Amino acid sequence: MNRVKKKVLWLLTLVALFLSSTYYLWYENNAIEVTQYEKIIDNLPSTFKGFKILQIADLQSKKYRNNNEELIQLIDKSQPDMIVITGDLFDRRRMEEAQNSIDFIAQINSKYPVFYVSGNHECWSGQYTNIISALIEMDVVVLDNTYTIINNGNEIIKLFGLIDPAHYYPEKGKEYEKFTGIIEVNKQLDWMSKEGSDVPAILLSHRPELVEVYRLYDFDLILSGHAHGGQVQLPKVGGLWAPGQGFLPEFEGGYYDLNDKTTLIVSRGLGNSSFPFRINNHPELVEITLN
Image (cartoon, rainbow, N blue to C red; front, side, top):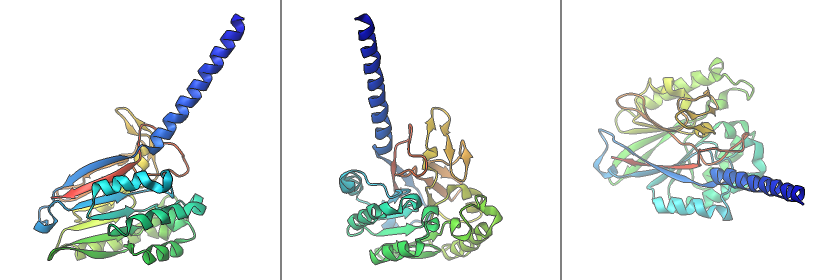
């Protein structure tokens, strides 16, 4: 009888461990955090004081239960002046789930101005043209290698967008510096920086690992994603691994002053791709207030 009880106890223990581990992984992947930052810009026009930008990164076609109600509620609670999407709204490995992201956009773009720049997943999906056409039809402002003027009262700032360098090189060419991608990135940022020199300028660019390129230009604020918070966060260490940066990435998520003027903010993102779990690294919405 004792042997039977021991077996039952072991079985119950294993079941409890399985259930608790499953819940933990589910919670880590779905408990959205809203991280708030303030960016002080020296020459910010007075009408933009307190202007709120909500950044969405790396949704990867994910749906947060019940047609993204929880995500929409957090966005509505923030009440941003505009929403920016810094790439990987879709996942090239799961394009059959693309409708999740389309439905999400349909819920937010009637309430807030939405601006988008592509990530590597859109560029490698084989459906880039269709994706861009669908977003434009939904009145999303696509900023791949272009810019727009944001008006508030009679004052302006400029919002630029850099297409992901994956657009210029094949999927298997991991070290894109050896391809035309890095050349095109410099070319695009050169004219953008000059165009934005007269007013505060914000850049949407999917990849944070291009820091040494960003330092060459004078944007006030750069918003990126791609790193997924390092996927696994280790205490006192930080992120474990990020695409484009490898192990122990320096720019896995957070607020980084690149020089006296330029700040880089990297979102931990909302979804996952090839590695399906986040550990000690909740999905994130980023809220930036200009001052």
